[in-house]
Image (tube, helix red, strand yellow):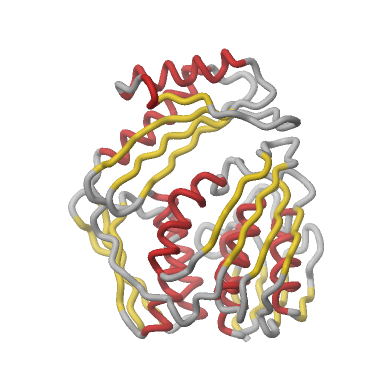
Length: 345
């Protein structure tokens, strides 16, 4: 039984999700105490409870402590099963985090799985759908893990109501780690504004201000179409496609925050990325660690990637992964960023 302190490191929900994912992948049970102790509202919130219940359904786990606000949990996994699954957070809590919890395990299943997920698709503090579809999923395919992601309906805080459909194909025999140390030449850069149920002037102002700051115009500035009954919500995105990967940066609008401020905040994210020549941005640095470690473990290899920043979130994730897998992470400065290595131990 692996014992994990949920207050360690940055003390957030990533500890729970990584533990659930790797428990399913390795068959190792765990106990988690002081869940999300580093947060203003500790314990399991609805989206975290949905992650636990989804993991339990996928592998017929024996679970104790799966209830709202619980601060301790024990999880004993069974056999991972392919299937058709429907998981709904029931609030604006992120359904993309639920997807990332079960995705690694379903790669190990014997057949394809189809998932329908409901909840928030574009939330602060969680990977937006477009980040998963454009940044994360293509790298997973290069790793040998194929998946198809479709956005059926946008879901913003506080209404939620978003919907994603995903197909995940088995990949245990095809996982192959690779190095990602160079982003390569930039191929394309563009901005989009999603603003369902809001005046069109909101999107135009945000795009205009962002275009002025980045020197972009024309087709680089796009008002994204929305579907009936979506929203309300506001997300401003920048997509930078390079030869070896794509990065997506997002800033969320909210009541009382001007279009100029939203555009300025997003511009700062983009500029920070452009000041480095490292491959991965801060969020991809954290989220790429787990699937890469799985491939390193399966092939008894070593692989590395460069990143623009090492956040407490990423460092904590490395530590949790090392509790479940015989993989050791190391980090060294590299140029104006960092080089992260994952080595079979």
